[in-house]
Length: 464
Picture 1 (cartoon, rainbow, N blue to C red):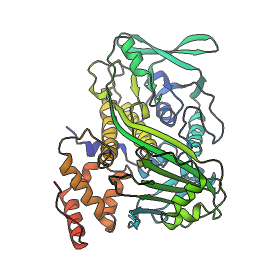
Picture 2: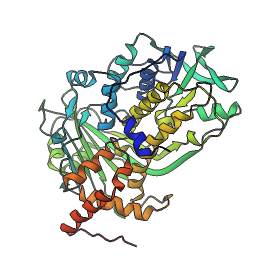
Picture 3: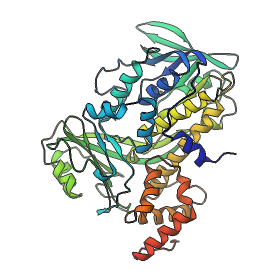
Picture 4: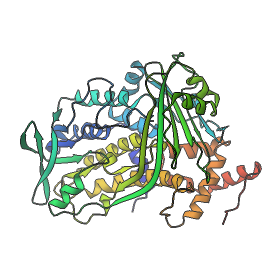
């Protein structure tokens, strides 16, 4: 059996997409989210036509959407996601830069661990922009394809025949009809109704796993005076303690419109940060770039956001599942947003779909080949985010087998990545979703981390 690391390496490749054949007539994507648009882009290579069913009228510019109440918060496109957008949309970064986004190099990104600056890895960069800006660019590029269109209506259910999905029941303005489909993609987000529809029609519904995280965000926008800032993005995080700090982490990025976007996150039963005076005070307790950013004019109100849990639906475990149907994006898995995995995971789901369809699968059989590929991406992101969440004293599990030892490994590597560039390259390649987490289990990586930590007097022993 092929290793997860090898599959992840194929999906996260930056090689151009080739050998695309038309395999179906009409494909229908449920949801005009980022994940939905990316799925539609992939399907445009393999379907005669692609219809995106979206209940809201999609904005023609970089504007918020009703279906994404969190889109005002900071969203990061990790290096792994950046590579996939290059593959799907040649010239994407040039367009983003022309629209005002900042293409961050590894030397214009700074990370702080408990106030200590981390060494740059010299390799990983980001596209720094607001989520509405990035979504609008992806949406514009996708809808410019001649065989892709949007249908503004509500999806109300699925039609099945002979073990396969054959259509989507749609409704708008009192009318209801069936949109015939040769392939259907669920991109309806965390609140996806697919499980209900499957169960109603006699199919298995995917079990949902949850991990309580209880995180609160507060995001502020401030005027940026430097069009080409020396430092374009930063993350400052604090080691979890028994008494959660008022700010567990703070992230800042330079975005389009000459603005700073700053997000402060905290855990536990703390009141939301809504007051700009408190927001500026808390930024003043972080590294200098935060104090400098909030010194500019405030643009709009402080935006709060709460997320109770991370969750995943394990489609790969279903023994009975209809053919010609898959699920992508947050409809499959959504993680603690503090780790910035959401958008990059969506791009890798699209890569999994592309590889699956380019393998010329039997579409009349359940898409197990797709779900096996997607599982590798979901497992990787889930492992990264839940391992960090489980390290918090206020999170009570469930703990996976071997957690104590794996936690010790992770602590050694994370500690060494603060000062050692070689370890930082390997560590960041995983957290930026370019490499599978198993790469950190290499003996050479752990031994180097132990040597680095020993030389700096950091504790080596596993604590009982």
